[in-house]
Length: 276
Image 1 (cartoon, one colour):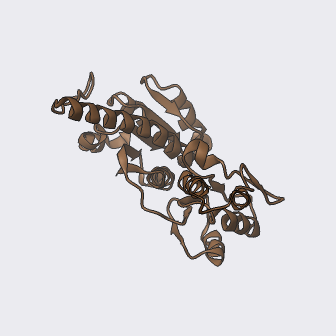
Image 2 (cartoon, helix red, strand yellow):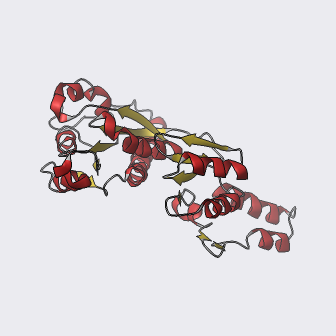
Image 3 (cartoon, one colour):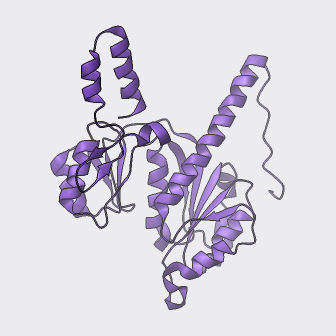
């Protein structure tokens, strides 16, 4: 149950439109609902601001359908990650209120428009890294963030990255997705004044060891402000970027409100030391 529904429920009880016993029945599955094969964390949206995410790999289609059917009663913008086309077809048997982001391998159940706040830049080194980058980008968008995509700007042609720094420098956080030697995270980290989340991918030739080479390169980055998620973990990077961006957007909104109260005009923000 999300915060909007819970608030509405409490207001109905307070006004007398809903009996306490009926409210108790509506709340019977908080904080979780036990399906036998899964315990759905219905309280997560109240704690974290987003409903539980369904990780599809390793689950049967019947299990996924059962989880979706229960969660769809209470939440919007439910994400089912690492979903195949067959999983999407199975979910559509439960509800037609869903869309499939094929490149990102994410099904969004009960998709709802959210206000896109702040700015997250998702950067990929190569075209082959785009599926992981899209997992990060779609995750961030579903969570209510404005996302710009800067793809195929790897270090083998660094001029491609330098040509789009205007977009990059306005981001509150950058997600950098790279395979091979994973050098792009360090390069971006040396250019921007915002946090950088490196996502190593399993893209590369034999000596990349399925993404371990990129992972170690990013972990050993000499650029300050670079953190790293696991190999191919676009979802984790998109979620973490959303948390950072929401804090930055909240701070910017607070400053705007203060300026409005005092009559001060908005002042230009410094890009940071080292920026052109």
